[in-house]
Length: 552
Picture 1 (cartoon, rainbow, N blue to C red):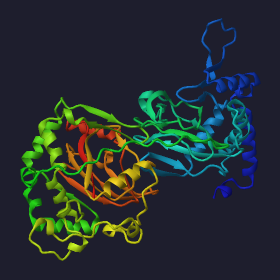
Picture 2 (cartoon, rainbow, N blue to C red; picture 1 turned 180 degrees about the vertical axis):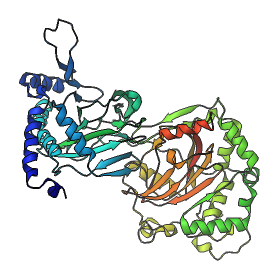
Picture 3 (cartoon, rainbow, N blue to C red; picture 1 turned 45 degrees about the vertical axis):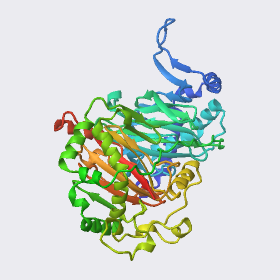
Picture 4 (cartoon, one colour; picture 1 turned 90 degrees about the vertical axis):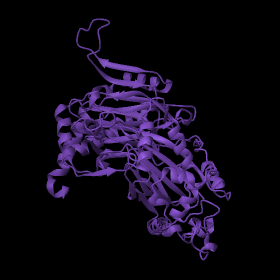
C-alpha cells in the first residue's frame, strides 16, 4: 500500500529526503574538534557541555544554546538539542509518523502505542532519518564512544498519551550497545510527566533511586550506553499532550554481564497453633459450613481460582479498616524499581487488631480451612490421593482433588486441570530454596500487609520463583475502585502477555488462586486516574491488601 501511495516517485522522494537529512543534522556533529573532545570526555567519564554563542559574546556570557551535552552520571548519556537542524524537516517527519498505524501495548512493564518496526518504512522523511542515523550519526557515535557499531539499527515510533508509562528497566538485550530517543513533542513541562528518569544503582547493580529526569523537548535526541546499570523509565504522562518519539538501538559486540543478584525471598514459616475458635471469631459463618466448603472446593477444582465475598464478619472487617488508618503503622517502601514499588507494613508497629488478623492468616485452623476450600494438602488432616474414599462428616474429610504430583509426574499431567504445562523451577538459588522449603513435607506460608497508592506496581522478573503455590489476597479500603486505575493482580503464562486471570481489588473479599510453575503474576501500575477517587473519598488515596502464599 505504501509503494502504491508513493508510486514511481517514491524512491526519488526518499532519496531527496535522505540528502536533506544528511545535510540538516546538527552542525555540531560535523565538528571534528568537538568529536575529539567528546570522545575524550566519554572515555574518562567526564561531563562535556558544548554550545554555540551569539556573535560578539562577552567572556562569561551564557551559551546561546547547547549543541551537545555529555554526562557521566548516573550512567553515561548524551543530549543533543536541535538534532535535526531544519525545522521544516522535523515537522514533516512528525506528520509522517502520526500518519502511521499504531498498536496499543499493555503489560506489566508498559502502557503505550507503538508503530511497526521502521527499518524498511518507505515514508520519505522516515527513510531519510533512518539513513542519517545509520551513516552520519552512527559514525559520530562510534568515534565518541569507541564502540564498533553495526551499520543497521532497530527503530520504531511510540506515542505516550494520558497515563501511559514505561517502568524501570535496563534495555539490556544481546548486542544492544547504544539506545537513542528523538523527541517530537509539543511544548513540554516537567508537570506533564513523560520524563526520562535515570536511576543510580547499588553494589548489586540494582536500581536505587532516580537521580536525573530529562524533560522531553522538541527535536532533541538523547542517547545512552546500554549496560548492566542503565536503568531508566518513562514516567507516567499526566497531561493530555501526545509524547511522540522515535527510538531504538545501535548494536555492537556484546559485553560481559555480572552475575544476577538473587534477593532473599520472604521468610516462610509453618502454621502457628490456633484451633478452630479463631475462625468463628473472624470469618463469616457461611464459609464455615461444611456443605459450603464442599461447594467452594468443587468450583475451585474446576477453575483453580475463586473469590469469596463478605469473607469476614462485618464488625470484624470494620475494625480491620479502622486499624489500617492508624498513624502509628510504619510503612516501608519495597523495591528495587525493576521488580516492584509499593509499601509494606512493619509488623512490630501494627495495632493489635491487625496483628491478630495476621495470626489468623498464619493459623493452623486457616491452613486446614484452605485445604477444605481447595483440596490442597496444607494440613496433615487434609486428605491425600489415597484418602479419597475415606468417610465423610469431618471438615478435613471433604472430598478434595489430587495434590500436586512429584516433579516428574507434573511434567506429564497438569495439576488441578490447569491447561498450562508446568515447567521445572528455574535454576536459581531462590527457586531451589523455595523448592526445598515447600517439599520438606511441612506446609508453609509467607506474606505481608501492603499499601497501594498512585505509582505503585510489581513486575514479572527473571528471578521470580516459579513453583506450585496457593495465592491468597484479602482486600480492604477498595470502595469505588475502578479497574481503569490499575492495582489489579494479573496472572499470565510465562513468556506471554495475554492475561489468564485478573483479580480486581474488592472490599472484604478473599481471592484464592492456585498457580503452577508456568504462571507468573504482577500488580498493574496504579495510574493518575486513581486520584479521581479522592472526590468521593477525600482521605483514601489507595487501598490495602494482605498478600499471602501457601505451599504444600
